[in-house]
Image (tube, rainbow, N blue to C red; front, side, top):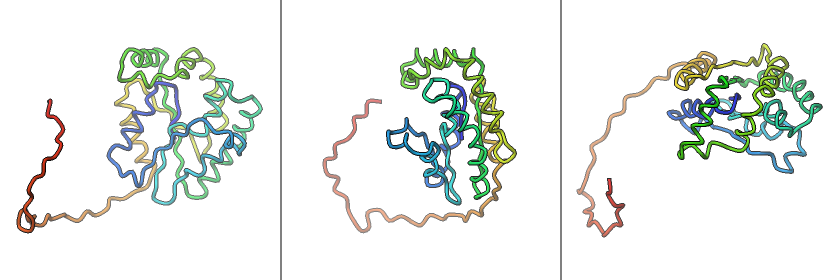
Amino acid sequence: MFEGRDGAGKGGTIKALTERVSPRVFRVVALPAPSEREKSQMYMQRYVSHFPAAGEIVIFDRSWYNRAGVERVMGFTNAEQVGRFLQQSPAFENAMVESGIILLKYWLEVSPEEQERRLRDRLNDGRKTWKLSPMDILSYTKWDEYTQARDEMFAATDTAWAPWFVARSEDKKRVRLNVLSHILKQIPYKDLPVKPVKFPKRKIGERYKAEHPPFKYVPENF
């Protein structure tokens, strides 16, 4: 799972992790705000249905730790609910690990100066404006609140069976390489033998003569 400051580079790191792997094995889960029905459920219930089976990898782009971060700082949940979440999370994660799931929790950390630079870059670049949500603007004003929420979350949920790993994200390329390298060291794997592929001879025009109907071609403007 990936958590961290707004603008810390979670999306780019996840993209680097998934761009050259099979989508049948790797799934990215980024849940929207809960529906009214989901609000009535046990808090972590809607995440459980996305957990992996054997041989699968699920990447949470933000996770149940929304409760200890965004929801807490933005006032979407109260202190009692946050306290209950922090108390229950270690046991919940212990059950995951004991069932055979390898749980890796990453927090991407960025300095206030670099966060501001990245958020302003989104504002001024039309290709990135869609990334700048009203929540990002609000979070920009609540640096200390997020810092306190992060520290209390770590204190309660950094356990021997599910520790937090903090990745410094001042340099996007470096943090991506560092995180990918770290993941590979946490998951046991072995190289699979690859059988050489020999292409057969392709027969063109021996069985069917194409007459080339008048296709509608895309204009070649470039």
